[in-house]
Length: 279
Image (cartoon, rainbow, N blue to C red):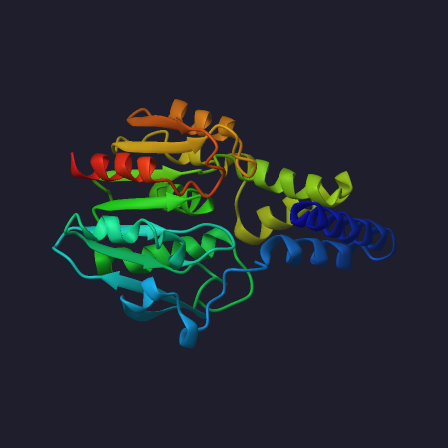
């Protein structure tokens, strides 16, 4: 019932944007991008943090006009970095973190733009990549784990960075940004003209080519050992996206799951993940 209600609301919003586009195309584009880039959930209150984050050492970092927060559970010299996805925050790892702590390694998680304790209202991948660029020399992780768009952020970071990891782990990660944008257009039922305007705006603003913004392409020349976990009936990121990444990323193995959805919280999966880290 909740999903159906969300679908109805999305359709009404899409209808409003479509109608506005005939009267004021520029304003319609602004509204469409605003809704696309603004998380509806995932923010945190410092005075009401989830218990797992209260146990961490919290640091505030500045990157240009942005502020982001990181959380550290101190262990040995080896560090694992956790990168969350859309409408989430560092606490999405609350089930996995205690198991990672048992490995003896230092665990670090961060909040993406407009998520958790980090500043701003707009989420975009280039800004998230800047957060990684700032955090890497500070924490020097040897292993990195990304969920959903968090994995795409990692891929984009690695496409230009000289930094290398010993292992990379992806959970439900999309390959093509164009798929994410197309899904958004479909959910709202937006006109093709608005779709193209969004493509043009994003490409101009961030100086990127949508068709080239692909996790599969980002990792095509990467030889870091990796593992891809993806559910066969993920209704957010289709399993075909994992196939694309796996085909391109030669040193990665693909493990498919059933009935875990997009969140992929599962004891067996986490056992396999820990085993990959330790072996």
